[in-house]
Length: 422
Image 1: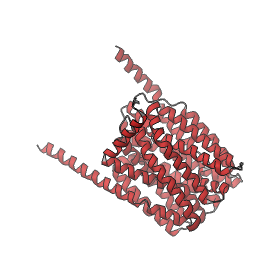
Image 2: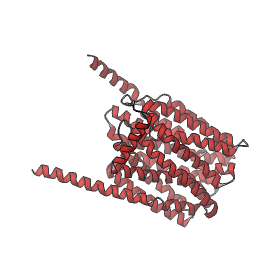
Image 3: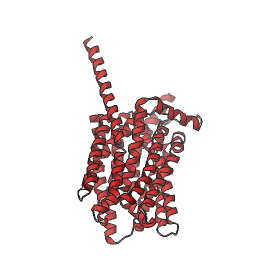
Image 4: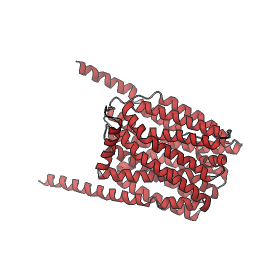
């Protein structure tokens, strides 16, 4: 009788309340990414610091802050729950934008930019292992975990849509004569809405925390990653790819500015993220159709070749080529996230994701400093080309994973054939 009553309440709770997590996470992603300064962030930082090296150092600080925060925040998500960590991360993003806004009117502008970078790094660490885990566990409540790639793609699509809109709004504001500081001020409103939406999410009831020691919990997560060859190589490739992509994405406006007028630069982001929104919307279907390893390999190779061509010709057509690569980025990111979630353990899901993001943040921080210094001496195109060449080994790793996936599928098919024949 009691069990029947509990199951009835559980179904009632899930049907009427828990489902809203999907919409609230998508809304939080949209408003958190509707940052008008984002399309010209590196240019705005350069206006405060007077140097691309110092401007990129803000992203390096962000990456290192994320790296230092990744492991404790991942364990925090496994300990106190997904909802609380989502709220903390959203609040940290708001603080980061506030610091950026204040940097334009302060004698300590660089220090405030660094403070904003630290806040954003902390927020990224909060979200990295937590939000996908919250989606996965909410789907698990409805016994639909196989739909994780589709949901990750749809939520990410909302973020890309917001970034595309921010490019249009930023271009319009700059054309009207608004300053970079004004763009920061407008961004405070949208990020604030994201904080409010996070307050209405619900903790997935199937989330189970462990009472193990914090250090032991982290070691267990690390051991699980290192123990399984597939997950180990996937984590290594993901860390390199994500870190280098973040750096390239932050610095690309400096390259676009050399081939397009400055006021037109935000429209590059609009087109890029508009294509990205479309790519993320269908990325779940493409990942399921091709298989995650094949999607990772083909998408990475395509992006590398097209980007290299864009930096080599360095003409008015280059930004259009880079915009196309956003399609492959959407597919590879969705495939990577889905593959990770499928291989993570339930008890350490957020911590394992944070360990991978920890490595990504270190790669991103180091590469940001490298690109900044190279750009001051060699130019934007040469520095981005150098960064691109460093990502070539990732394609080789994905190729090996793809070949093993084919081999595994063939063996399974042969076993089924033998059983049928027998």
